[in-house]
Amino acid sequence: MSARRRFRQLVRIGPVQVGSSYDSRGIEKHTAACTAPRCGFSADYDSRAAAELAARTHRCPVR
Ligand SMILES: [Zn+2]
Image (cartoon, rainbow, N blue to C red; front, side, top):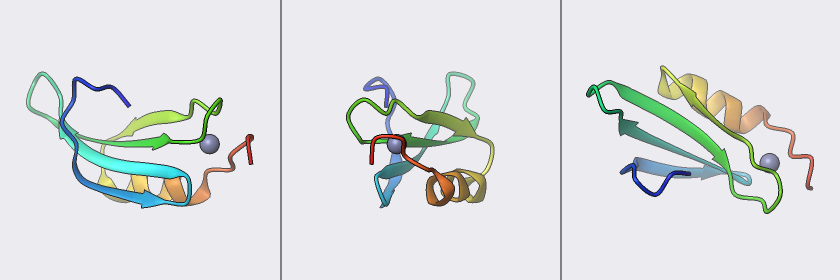
């Protein structure tokens, strides 16, 4: 995850962290990012539900 952004409501689902933040335009974004070394999965979603679903369904290639 980018260190510049402030994530709220940070939760961990398996190896994936989900957090909500506001982008430079003040629009809320929901990010799912895998914490496993060498995985590198990270994606932004428009809704919290979509980010949490992505976290739950993430098939980590490292594990
Ligand atoms: Zn992963």
